[in-house]
Image (cartoon, rainbow, N blue to C red; front, side, top):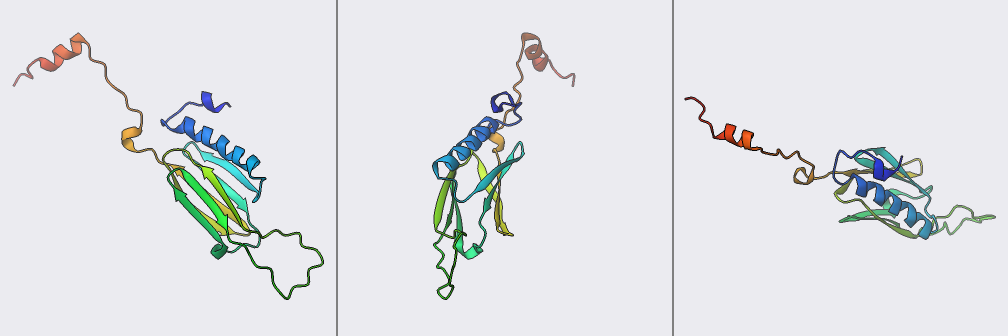
Length: 150
């Protein structure tokens, strides 16, 4: 289903889908490391899942500034006494920035089994949500002016 044809319940949903496309484009620009998924959870939330095997919570930093989310890790120093015959597990420093949809907030972040899961919700303020506006006619305007019979 095309995001432009999706029935909206909130004003910012079209921007949510556009921003998810932006996130996918950022993956292509950044070479894909660290590997990650973008998952639509429901109409108002999505999840980013990063494959970060071997990283600890202390080595990972998340920062949201407005509509920008940055996921970064400090460089991990290899075990000095290890005698590697092959080094295939990458644990290098990285920084990835993502443009989030308007009104996005990081709901929670969890590192479990080498996967960093970031839940993001779109919380449109009440004053920004669609509202129905009544159209007055001459008949309804006259009815409001009539005395209530007190």
